Amino acid sequence: MTTPDKAWPYPRWIAHRGAGKLAPENTLAAFRLGAAHGYRMFECDAKLSADGVVFLMHDATLERTTNGQGIGGDQPWQALSQLDAGGWHSRAFAGEPLPTLEALARFCLANRCLLNIEIKPTPGTEAATGQAVAQWAARLWQAADVPPLLTSFKPEALAAAQAAASALPRGLLIDTLWDGWFEQAQALQCVAVVANYALWDATTVTQVHGAGMRCLSYTVNDEWAAQHLLALGTDGIITDRVDLFSPG
Image (tube, rainbow, N blue to C red; front, side, top):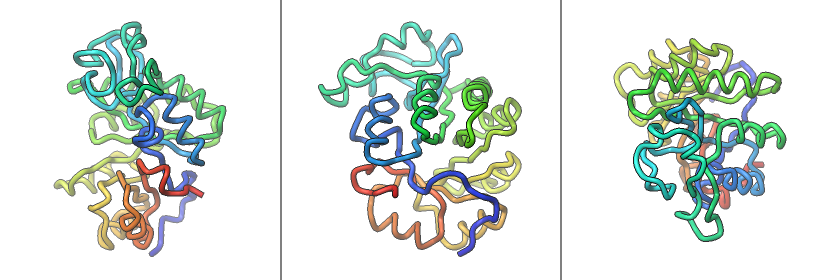
């Protein structure tokens, strides 16, 4: 099955939230561990603090992955920076802090790693988060050969990112084939559709490739699923199992 002609600068294998479940997600410890397993590209979740700092966290609320309480985006960075974002995972990571996007950028650039930044807005801040993530990413990676790939489930966030830094590549995340998903990806001038891996079949792959976009999948943790996606000719696999899949 053919893929779009335009050169694709990203590797096929992408480590989910740094190192999947082997380390506390979205912490620098996780990205270091993913890199130690040979991964050259990572996925992370980025959101805005109350005072406009872009930091890494998946959930809107703090309880699952930190020792804090409440909505992360409602708190200033000074308070967020004091939280323990590792102790929930295991004692070995106790005291690991929440990182800023800037800190992760320094790590990635120093180690020649690539990044997929999922714009993960606190509900109600879609446009503001998309704008801020894109502005920070454009500034932090301005001298890089390969920019980060910005993705989101929220079209409003991607539209704001497009307006703020149109040169940065974008991808639409989808969990279902909702009415208009394909047209939305085209309208946002996306370079990729990042789908729940179960959505890909010969028809959807052909449709996306035919429009000049790439097909990426999340979150692929089983060998049979990976082999199926490779056989379909998809272009990227986001996985928790950095210990199972060799990215080479």
